[in-house]
Image (cartoon, rainbow, N blue to C red):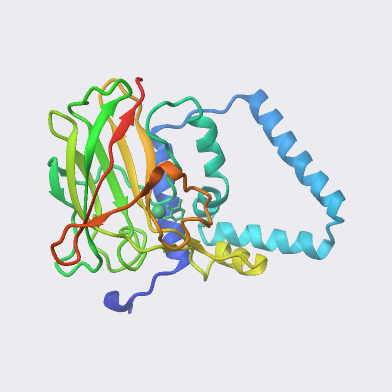
Length: 284
Ligand code: MBD
Ligand code: FE
């Protein structure tokens, strides 16, 4: 019998949930990749791998270590985590290179669509005793020309004060620290939440094994995940970080940009902090 209250977070459980989440997203938006593109991209990827093998004289022991590790990535459901940590940032860089508005960054494996709708000033769903420094995150959604965007939407999801995401770690309410905020008629929003903790890549799965084997650290800096959108404008997926926080200069996922670092100030009420950040959306 599993004791729900003491269930521990595991790489395999979190990986299975992320894999499931990705599959359900794919079902609704599957587009075939062009044959010529597959040919070019896979051929170049394999040729790059062949070059590395020759240049470094890769041994059978190393080849077999890679094979076992790749098998384990699948077993642990960690393909979404692996790809989003070590590859997505370059896909995002290419996808958003021509944008003028707010900088994007990676989505990562823990977005869940259709979080509860909240009004323009709202507190994210959280536990009565939710730990963490209270944070008021407020701002406005505007167009590149400065005009306010009515009917803008700000989706937000984040880890808790222990670095865990609801729906990907045990013992958390389903929509904890997730919401879809509908801004007011001038694009303004005020979101009451808590400051998240840094995120540690699970150490008990394939990605953790790689990190240990290579002598890296397993951390992402504390971050808020966001998707901002408005009618007639391009949705932007981004993250915001905290100035001076651990790993801001050394993110395992290479997803920090200087424009995305917040500097919340104490409000003077207890430990509360607040920060203003405005989103700027490119035309669709
Ligand atoms: C995260 O929280 C995250 O945002 C990314 C991109 C990868 C792993 C964990
Ligand atoms: Fe994250």
